[in-house]
Image 1 (spheres, helix red, strand yellow):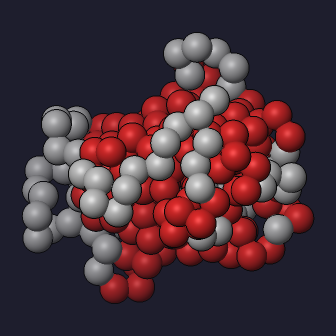
Image 2: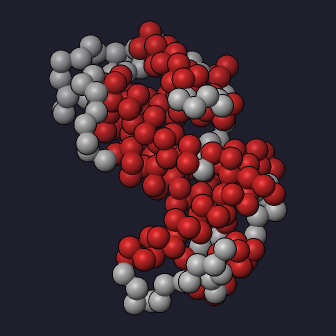
Length: 224
């Protein structure tokens, strides 16, 4: 495959198209050869782009995963209608992220399998995931004030981790198992009173205060 690299004066859509092609190719190669063996030089040669120019766009392998995470966040947080209740909004936000992940499924699975052997990657993705879950919790309307708010962000991260593990194993075309797992996690969150709405922005929902225990469901795992 050959894909000419846009010049420095190229329009943003040209660069976005190139980035999309590069990421898709990298994820395909990671799925085939494993994340640890993925070489950005090999990807550059595969797409027919100058290595020095590619390095300016993707200086580290991690950049590929960060870009995918950014695309997933943008898709999740785009304001095109979400559920009326806090629970429905949280369900929509998390599933929208997974809809983007699904496009790079096998490559992301390869990256997930590499996490136990790559502490730097695990630490980086853990930090970015926590930041994303803070945004998602806020957008869903969860009360993030005080110490309880920090714990609620951790709980949302646990819900995401639990669901992501199910997604990793879910080969159904409609992600039915993944959605059922997310529903189960949200049920538990409601049962333990985790979904406490923000009083400054949202009203009309039940007030929930305490948090669920996801310790048996890999809540502490580092994820994308």
